[in-house]
Image (cartoon, rainbow, N blue to C red):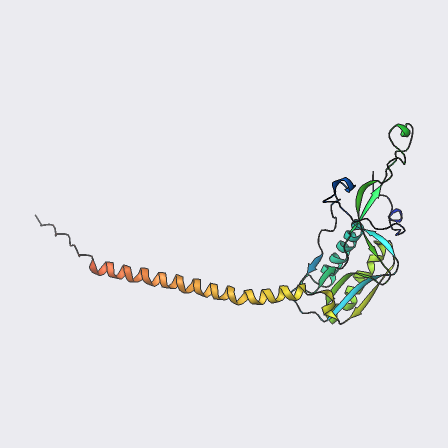
Length: 236
């Protein structure tokens, strides 16, 4: 059976369910958490210094399933790669699907009363994950240069067809608000580059020294070796 429509899960009237009982196993109603469908949270080039940041902001209080967020990520990532270039942007998902969706499935059709137990165990079984957002919350951010701002905005506005709420894009210059991970990676890379260069230089010098040693040994061996001449054949 396919997935149910998004409007079945977008309401936030019930409290979020996130608890997994590790110590008290009698209260661990969720036996196993559903797998996360968002495959990647950071995409693009984290080493470049960008000048603009675009935030994707939701306008309603809803629940967004992780498969909808994954579909949004794939669509925006493909659009940015095509229109901006894979080295000219950095994208980061800013929200995490912490809410676990439950459903008490009831069979329908003839003889369904023999399969289903009705509401006697109405807690339900876990069927997926979702993230809960409030109006004005940013769920995704993109770093680009000023020249690619409009192209990135058009790619991000396509999320209206993938999410159960309307969205808007906010453009500003507070690049540090996306977090410190790209900067940390950039600093680590800068620190690693001179170390790699020094290691390469040491390897090349060591190889050159070995070659010189082998040449000197060969010359010394040729000098020490006795010269043997074959006796000339006598003419008859």
